[in-house]
Length: 182
Image (cartoon, rainbow, N blue to C red; front, side, top):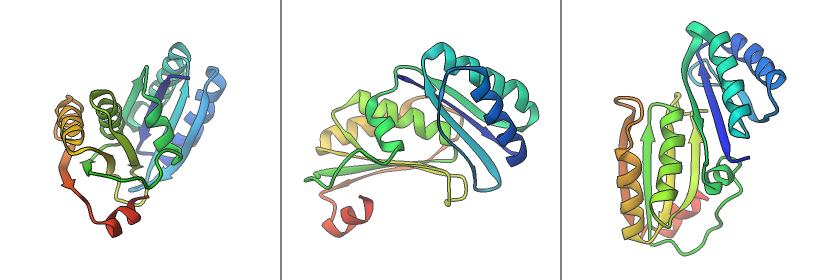
């Protein structure tokens, strides 16, 4: 199950209907389907590439004017899946953290995958738009050089124009701050 698909819709009612149709269309797993801020609906699936593409195409076709963004990301790094499911990293020694903040969930997913493929870093958190006004962010950690390389690579990937809000690297973060991130 190395591919994820994501559809962001501006209609909750349509989102529920579309999630059902996507599940009935192809052999996929539903990671989540939920209402989010500000009045959007997110559908995240995973499975084999062809099945995910088929389901996402159904979602886009049915969603028409309600589709805000969509994404099929094949060969996604396992660290991204673990972070989405909040089952990744434990509170180990951390030399640096990198935070990338986006206006879109799809940009955040692409950045997380790019970061862990670009440098030996771990993902502390991927927050996908719920409870933060529809924004999303990724927090990574590792040695300072690797975190810088990962943030640079992830923030330079061309996603949707203007979707990167900010990026920061914090060297030797305070233990109290780290505790709040895990």
